[in-house]
Image (cartoon, rainbow, N blue to C red; front, side, top):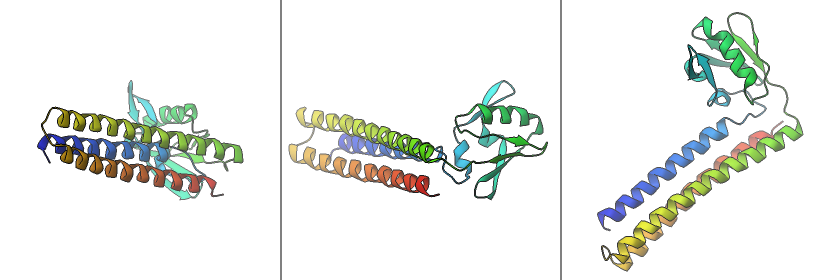
Length: 188
């Protein structure tokens, strides 16, 4: 295959891998009945006037399935962390004993579970749409190489098969992640 087709395929694969990573992070941010630090991946705290990811300001422990302890590295950030948690869309009510912030996750209601499953499906669909767009762009490039006579039609169709295989592989990864997240959400 021609170097430029190789480049197009390599770039498509790289972008699809990134789309899977974004989906993974999105799924981690969706709350389930179990406590996990991933819930806070996207949460930012106003720290000395700058929005800072909570993960950089504190350590997390999960002593029980539905309890999270957040220990700020800098005690002066405790109020700001607590405020960010209250204002987040996680639906948690943090309490602070001066050393750690404790979050007891309430049992998810059936309705809340369904909302989160819908959200997971939306995030998964977003990732797949992104992959289809990446595929379309790479296919257009391949078609252009063939049309310009840079590569033969056989090479073009071989490259397209490789591209379809990549797309299928990464879409399946997203489906798998989405299925696992739904299973997690349905666990009581």
